[in-house]
Image (tube, rainbow, N blue to C red; front, side, top):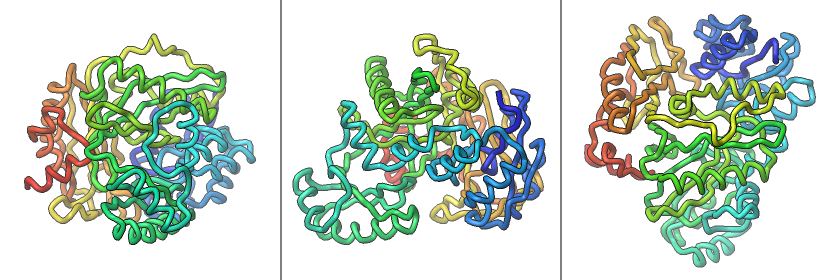
Length: 448
């Protein structure tokens, strides 16, 4: 097992990883920018090293600097968390080249999983259904028109080199298609350094359902069930739950097998996620691979009783999985609300600032992953996620009731947050009934 691990991240995920490392009696090394000098990860890690200015490109995204720090600190391994460099194949390769174990998939698997067009081809070859669309990158306007004519409007334009909604546009006719292709390519180039785009049939009112995968270095690959991630705004998830109210046992088995096939096709190791789009008739289509720990991983932990970060570390250290698929026991229902420092009444504008007081909810079945504390100043330089409120209940109804109670208890004074917004969703008739899809939020916001 490792003796010392560097966490190449910040905020709640850095703190969450540090806690598991402490449980495992492994020394932790935090890195921090000027803006994070007083953060909880810095205070809780066994060692903390400054890596530069507040701007991410000069600190958390500076690969060379982070590798140098890891080497000088004498770490055995590096955990990237999520975001920043977590899905950067060049960074994973740099760790490999410098004798630092990357707690995640190999750089080769990262490359295959991260290139959307390539991963779709791999899924298709593995016999997993994919959304009808272009066979590769679209090279001309005329080719785009031909594809749209074949698969019929509406179509969605996607960036091949990244995710998070960047470069994505929905076109309902030729005029929109021509305009959006240029916009998407430019946005993809700016965000990912890769202007390649591809086109798919836009599935109306799909559910976004993903499967958590664990794979070791001995060829063992299992899934831990699904997460429903359909409540989204601008392709960013806001509420996740496990299991999904839409998935029955047969569908779960079939989708789980499909997810494992995709991961085995890219020789994937460590924790990862296979995402599917599911239409109203229950037909599911491969969407993409997320080659990292997901923000929403706690809901899977709550229903399985497994620490996914511990599993990641154990796999990276060369240990085989200790559990088989048939031994996994999923129990009850879990739900997560992402709490962001945003103003829902002002088009969800980021709202960083000074936290005057923090009151966290408690009680049976309640978990809060956060790096906040009273007196902490949220910097304006990074993602607005400040906490993840996670609950467990014996069924979905119980989980919603417990989430409503926990949201009422949670108080973050001094800044605007999405807490009131989540309270309203928990009372929405369609949400409570499970009638949700990726367009749920658009209708919810129109209701006022």
